[in-house]
Structure formats: C-alpha cells, structure tokens
Amino acid sequence: MKIIKRFIMLFVILDNFILNSLKKLFFKTNWVLGGKCKQCGSCCKRILLKMTRKQIESPFFTKLSIKWITWLFDFILLDIDRNNHYLAFTCKHLKPDGKCGNYFWRPNICRNYPLVDYFEEPKLLPECGFKAELRHRV
Ligand code: SF4
Ligand code: SF4
Image (cartoon, rainbow, N blue to C red; front, side, top):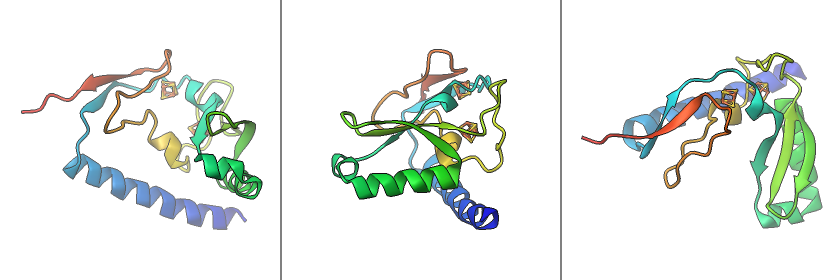
C-alpha cells in the first residue's frame, strides 16, 4: 500500500510544483511572504480543509473524504465543523519538537502554507515566522 501512496503523492507534488511555477512566472499575487518557517509545528496541530456546504451535508462524501485524506496524508480527524464547512485534522508525522517527520512526502497543503491568495492578505498564525508583505510593482 505504501508504494501506491508514494506513487499518487509523486503526481500530487509534481502537479503542485508545475502550478506554483506557472503562478510565479505569469500570475503574480499582490502579497508575498517574507521571513521564514521557524519549524514550530503550530500549523500542523489543527489543519483545516474547506468543503462546500453540499459536500459536508453528504455523509457519504464526507466519510469518503476523511478516509482518503487520513490514508493518503496520514492525517488524523479531530472534528467536523459543519457550520463553517471544515474538516479539522492533525498529523501523525508531527514530531514533539514541532518538526515534520515526513518532510519530503508532505502534502501540498503543507507545501503551500501559508497560502498566498489573489484577493486577500494571507492569514498567518500569531507564532508563525513568515510575514505577509505587499509586492512592490515596478
Ligand atoms: S506532513 Fe509534516 S508539515 Fe504536513 S502536517 Fe504533517 S507534520 Fe506538518
Ligand atoms: S506556523 Fe509558520 S513557522 Fe510554524 S511551522 Fe507553520 S509555517 Fe513554520
């Protein structure tokens, strides 16, 4: 099973790499990230995955999503926020010192955190070592 998981993750990681490279080249965001990761592990303690209202109202889809995410990413379900449409997970690779025990194979949600959106200032945890800065356009 591990080999299948690795095979799927290779495609997922490659897809993310290509998409991020294209964004950097052609679709620049207004915000950029300064600073760096302090490897505090705070963002791995409660990972929120957004769903649509229709998705979270479907017991079948919700169950399937949880099964897929816990299997592929080794996440552990914490709770389901039905009001705001989130699945909340933690991760079994988070080490006691806050570091990642699966760094090379970490999912895209980890690779892309903190997420830099096109329309909003990035939302950072207070203890995060990154900071959002406005891009200076020439
Ligand atoms: S895979 Fe690593 S970076 Fe991602 S949530 Fe788990 S411990 Fe954190
Ligand atoms: S909260 Fe920020 S500094 Fe801490 S591990 Fe996550 S990205 Fe790194």
